[in-house]
Length: 142
Image (cartoon, rainbow, N blue to C red; front, side):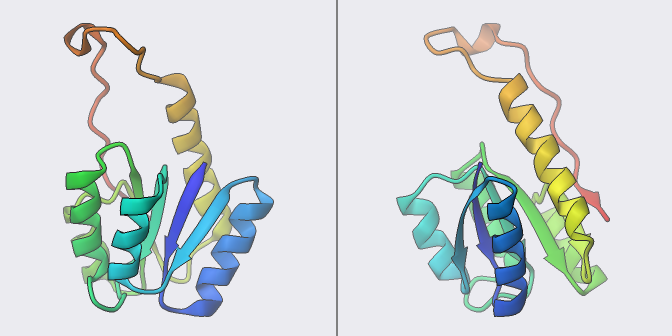
């Protein structure tokens, strides 16, 4: 999976990135919301992990942007503030983790997303109206 980690705290960004790379994912990092948007516009990502407290465009705004422009992307939100987790969930984040978070739970969430991606693949040249509709994901706050 191609993952974009958006986190202004370099220690947390490095922890997530190195862990995800060891799990076999391709990972890019962005420190700021606008940098994340530029990366999203120039590269393809399956998952975006974003903190709520990023500079420029906050995590909830970034989540709204992703959900309106890149509907196939999954968003994992992280924050140390309960109100910010609610904002991320309201903005469309698929899963939210409170800080400090259990890195293994992040891995499990990504494993679930990977399983969904590989199980439910659109068949090219098939009428979209004839394809089975998947239920809308609901935000999970942990």
